[in-house]
Length: 386
Image (tube, rainbow, N blue to C red):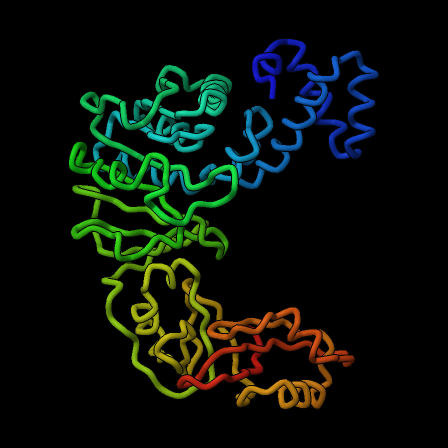
């Protein structure tokens, strides 16, 4: 991407034209920009950027139309609602100057600045740092944010009272799951709180609970039911051992994350907890809010005798409980005249799409089948969503 070209008056004109024609398909859009007199490299860069801006609306809203992106930068960027909530919490906790290590395209740095926090934004990749700097400028926050291209491990932290670190968890070959392979490496990242007590780490939702240090708060955040990140809060920022934050509602569930829910039989209603509740190991805390039990100690489905309005889970009424077999489930669904089937699973190795095809249904009704385990035994539940 020729970022410098896109920030010239000619680049701005190309971007404006690209935004209009990008939906017409790559060939037609490219021809349109070339017919308008834009050089091929600028036309290509503008069309790429227009496509990224359109894809970014879900994360950044209307501001995406004026921001700059790289494809990996957009994929890894924090959603604006998540970043704003974090920034407000940091500002309310007294953080006034923060180092954003691994700032990416600047999503969190922008949120910190909007919350009134001065930001030293650092990224080791020159293009990514340049994109972050461009976003800070176009959104008018350059008086509060300084962007530098540097190795995070070399940054002087003596002038800040807070640190936010989002270590890179991707390489050219894909996602990185071992924290030792993060950039900066885990040894550096996990020790930041010893240098600046008010430290926050943004991590992958699948982070190992064994890595949560004593005294830190581990938070999992979901947006519309999709778990988007884990976050470790250190020092004075930590308030509870575990927290599940559900956006956009902003409801919270907190607890120790250590106790197990009681186990019992399948009951009339099945609750499917939000992914953030499950990732935070707060299923027991949730179960207590609906007087619920588990049918299997290792499966995060909660069963109860009554419907309780809850923001923490989806609720289904259990219509039939079947020891699992393809023939048995198929017969039950055909008897009900089912043609359209939703398949959910937890604790089952079956592929939902393959299972759906195996049912060979032709009716007109709809149903949901839950493939799970009950007391260790493979089980199928026919349920209706409430």
